[in-house]
Structures are given as C-alpha cells and as structure tokens.
Image (cartoon, rainbow, N blue to C red):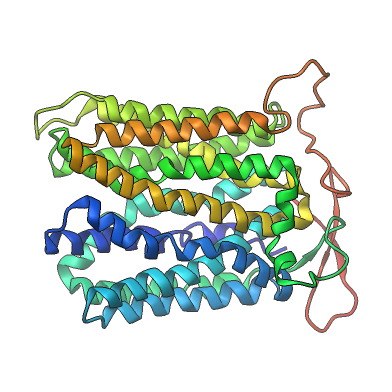
Length: 431
C-alpha cells in the first residue's frame, strides 16, 4: 500500500514557513509596526486555510488524490504569481489567497488519508507526516535567507514555487481505500459534504471549541519567538539558536509522542489534554524568562523554555488529529480533519495580531506570551469534557489494542484497495 507519510513529511509546510519569512522581510523593508502589519496580513495568511472543510468535501466527492494534486498546483502558482508582483496587494493575493487555498486543498485530505491508512500505529504515522512543520522551521529559515541574499525575493519565490509543486506528485501517490466504517452513499447536499452534522456530536463539539482556544496561542512562537529573543538581549545567532531549539524539540516530540500514544497505555483524549496544558505552560515559561542582556550569550533560560515549548507543542500536534477516529468514526475522519483545521486557523487569525498589539502597548512580548499561553491552557481545560480525558474507576483495556472505529475489524482490519477501471477490489490489511 502506498502510504503518503514519507512523501508529505519534507513538503508538509514550506508554504506556511516561507510565507511568514517573506512577509516579515517585506514588513521590515517598509518599516511597519508589528500590530498593524499582523492585522493586515492575518486574514490572507490564515483566512484561506479556514477552507479546510472545502478540501474535505471535495475529497469526499472525488477522492483525495485529484484534490491534493490540484492543491499542489494552486500553491505553486501562488508563489510564481507573487514573484511578478508590483504591489503588496499582489503579494497578498498570491501568497495568501492562491497559495493558501491550495494549502487548504492539500492538508485535510492528505492528513485524513494517512489516518485512514493506519490503525495500530496511527499517531506515529501522523506524527511523521507532520514533521515537515518542525523541519521547515529548522532548515527553511536559513535556506530562504540564503536564497534572498543570492536571488532576491522574486527569485526566491520562483524557486519556492518549484519546491511546492512537488505536492502534486506526492498527491498522485495517495491510494483510495474502502473501509467498513465508510458511509454507504455520497453526501447529497453541500452541508452534508462539509461534515457540519458532526457538530451534533457532543465530544466533537468539545474538541473543536478547545482547539479554537488553543489556536489563539499555538502559532505565536512561529511568528514572534525570534523577535522575543532579540528583545531579551540576544544577538541574531542567539535568536536563531532559540528557534532551532524549539524546532528540534518539536520534531523529536512528534515521533516520541507517536510511539508513546500507539502503545495504548493512556487514552488519546487524556494525552491530548496533558500535552495541551504543557504547551500552554511552555508559552508562559517563554514569556517569563528574564532579560539576558548580552548579545554574545546563548540565552540558556530562554533556550530551555523554547525547547520545553517545542517538546510540548510537537506532542500535541499529532494527537489533535488522531483522536478524531475515536470521536466521529473512521468514515468521517477526513471531514473532521478539515473542520478541526478550520477552527485551529480561526484561532490563529486572532493570536498574532493580539500578540503584536500587546507588544506595541507594553514594549516587549512578555504580555503577548502570557496572554496566548492562557488561551492554550483554557482550551486544554475544555478538553477535560472529552470521553476518557479524566481517569475513571472502570478497568483499563488491554494495552496496545486500539479502540473500535465504527465496525473496523481490529486489530488487523480488512480494507479494499480501489483502482480505477478495476471492478474487483483486492483485499489488504492496514499497518
């Protein structure tokens, strides 16, 4: 079975990281303040990603493969269009609307398909697929700076357009599966295709509410961790080292948490609650780190706080998507992924502008990280309303056996590999 996990890991989020770096470069050249700049760019940076349910609906109707391939083309065209821009509006339309819309078509169908491919090692598989986020933060930032120095921002955008075009052949590797928990018929209305009926499930409603609150603070370090390190007295290399520490912790935690969660020792909703709370505490620790005051220093306290945040945030990321099969069933996981992505992005629309506003009002990022960390903690407390989030007196199930997923035959479920033009599906087993 052709799994997209390894294919999507290196290309999972260069679009998001490069858009952040390039727009920050343009902001500094224009001399804009963080608060109005964040307000102006957030609707086009996070707004199109709210369209995740659209990607899920299209995937439900036509399959993940063509939707992801089209999304890859749109993302690449967005970078190429921006390379020929003559105004900031063109940059917004290219990087925000066009590339963002393509990313929305890629993320939910691809990640939902990965969740459908695996049952026993689902969290590890999703963690591997999401390592592109930390890898791009670690590697793409210095690489993009090198491109900017040698080719300028226009040449850099053209090269990034070529890189993101690799999403199209990655999408071609997605294999459609027919699982026992799948709906017997296609949705008859657009609202049904979007999966809005999932909000009738109390557990899913609790999950999305908590996720929206977490989203307010979750993306702040991606935008303001390096400026915060500079405000604390570190030099450029020290700030880069702080960002690298968070990225390394993020990558390692996604793999370690994936292995830990797949052992079945602790229910996924409980792990989600714990690591969500630790992520909020990590943000609070980053905000409370004292002033370093030496540009030659490595900033040990801030470096440690950033590493703790990276470990916590990296552990949280795969869990938020892997808990979905337990709550809504494996047949609805793609639609649920799009809705969770939408709620996470809606929270992300508020976080960076709020952080920039507090920075302008107070003179540093301390209040920004404390406020956004409080939002993450609030979302984690909401997760306590999920089933199995709190310990109970009932006997624990045998470790290593995943929960039933609407009739999925575990521990080795039978699936059907669907190939175009072949009326007879061949049986296979998930990993």
